[in-house]
Length: 118
Image (cartoon, rainbow, N blue to C red; front, side, top):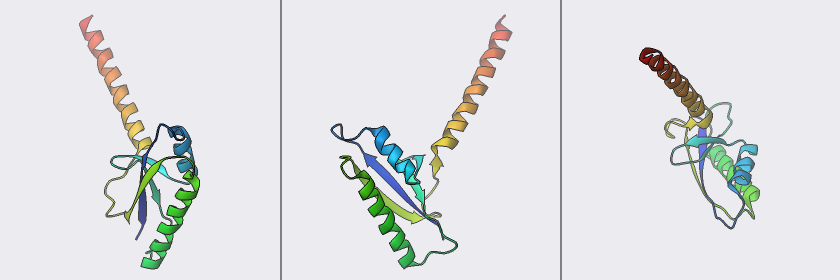
C-alpha cells in the first residue's frame, strides 16, 4: 500500500516569505496540491509498507520538514494516509493545464461570437 503525507502551511508575516518556504518543500520532493492541504509527498515503496516502515517514513519526513523549516517562523500540520484513503489529490500542474485548456476554449468561443456578430 502506498502512503501520502500532506502538509498544510501557515505563514507568519514576521517569518520567511512564502516563496522561500515553497521552494524548500519542493526541493524535498513535495508537490503543490489544491484543497485543505498545500503539498503532498508520496512515500516510495516497492510494495505494501508495514506499520513499522510507515511509522519510520512518517518520522523521517516529519524530522526533515522540521529541520528544513527551522527558523522560518511558519507553522505546519502533517497528515499521512494510505493513497486510497487520502482522497483525490489534485496536483496544481494538472489544474493549471485544465485552466489553460478552458481559457483556449473560451477564446475560441469569443472569436466565433465576434465572427457571428460581424
